[in-house]
Image 1 (cartoon, rainbow over the protein chains, first blue to last red):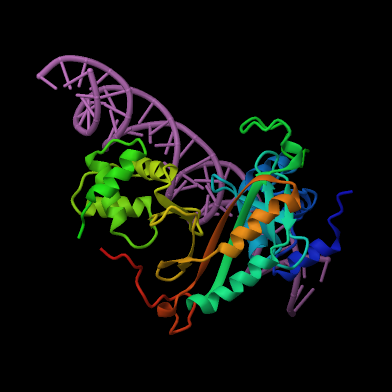
Image 2 (cartoon, each protein chain N blue to C red):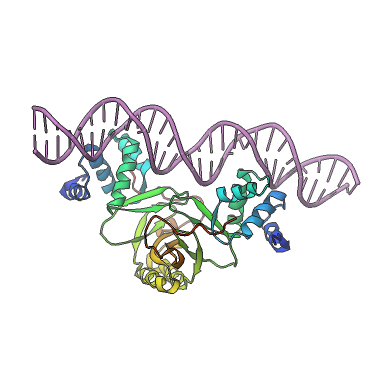
Length: 157
Length: 157
DNA sequence: CGGCGACGTGAAAACCATGTTCATTTAATA
DNA sequence: TATTAAATGAACATGGTTTTCACGTCGCCG
C-alpha cells in the first residue's frame, strides 16, 4: 500500500518536473485520497504523517500538477481550491456532496455538446467552461436538516 | 442617463433594505455598468467620481443584493467575485470574454434540464450548479494572439 | 565518480479579497 | 421632532495563496 509507482513518477517527469522527495510525497498522498482535498489539508496530512514538506511546496506542486493536467480542480463556496488526482485524460465534471465532500463524476456529455455548439451561436472562440455541481448525497440525507451533517468528511486519515 | 429611478429603489426596499445615499450610489453605478464588475473596481469608480462610500459598504451592499437576488455573481480565474445587475428574475448563465470582459447571457435551458435529471441519476438531493463560461469574443479575435488583448475592458468610465 | 549549474525548497513576509468590530451617523416611524 | 434600529466606515482581523531569497539537491556531463 502506498506505492508511488513508476507511473506516477513517470507522469510527473513527463511534465518536465524533477522527481524529489517532496513531490513524491505530495503525489503519493494525493493518490491515496479518493476525494477532493485542499492544499492546506493535504499539507496537514503530510506533516501529521511525520513528513517534512513545506506548505509552499505543496501549493507549488499542486499548481504544477494542475498545469500538467494531472489533477482536477474545483472551488468550494469560499473560493478555496480543491484537488483530485485525475483518473483519466478526459475533461470531467463532478457532483460534490455539500455535507461530506464525497465526489462523484457525472456524465456531462450533454453539456459538452451544448457548450461546443455555443461557439457558433455566439461568435466567441476558444470557449472554456467550468461547472460546479453540489448536492446532498444519499448517505447525508436521512435527517433532512440543512446545517448539521450526519457524516464526517470522507477521506479520513 | 444615470437615473436611479423608483424601480431600483423599490426593489431594494422590497428586499428589506433602507434607502441610503451609499446604497443608491452603488445601485446606480452598478446599473450603468453593462458588464460584470468587482467590488473593488466598483468602489474605485465611486470614489473616483467624487463620492464617499466605504469599501466595507460596497461589499455589504453587493452581498445583500446577491442575497436579494438582484445581481448575478460569477467568479473570475483568481476567485474574485464579479457582479452584474440582473435584468430578469430567472436563473441565468453568461459567456464572458477573457479579453474585454464583455458578457453575454446564453440560453442554457439544455443544461438546466440535464442538471434537473441528475438528481435521480445520482441519488443526490438539493442540487445546485454554477457554470462559468469564457471565450474570446468576435471583437477581440482579429489578431489571434493569446495574451495581448486588442480591446480595453468594457464599461469604461 | 565528482563537480557544477539549474531547478527545487521552505520560512517568513507580502498580497489581496473579504469579513468583523464598534463608535458614530442616519433613515424611517411614531 | 423624538426615538430607535439599521447603516456606515476606519481600522483591524482573516485566511488562502504567492513571492522572496538564501540554501539545498537533482541530474547531467566530462
